[in-house]
Image 1 (cartoon, helix red, strand yellow):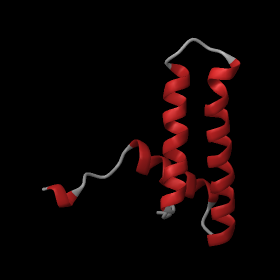
Image 2: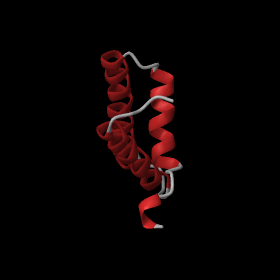
Image 3: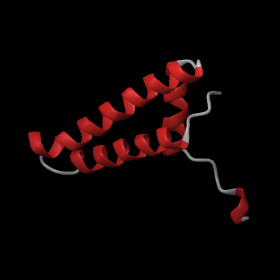
Image 4: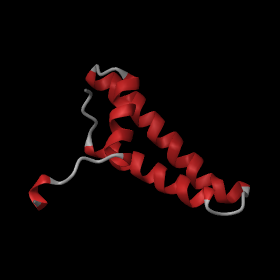
Length: 78
């Protein structure tokens, strides 16, 4: 499994949060602009990180999304 950087995971988190905010309100161009910008920043970062590390771009994107949407339980909290 690809290992996304903390920065990539954070950019993914920002995009997911922006999506949740945009879709929770009535559609407006201005309301969705932050989501589009965050998603574009995340996608560019995935492309850049894949090129820099040699990781498969799709697997890197999946790993970042999994880390944000389905995080592993914190075992130190046990």
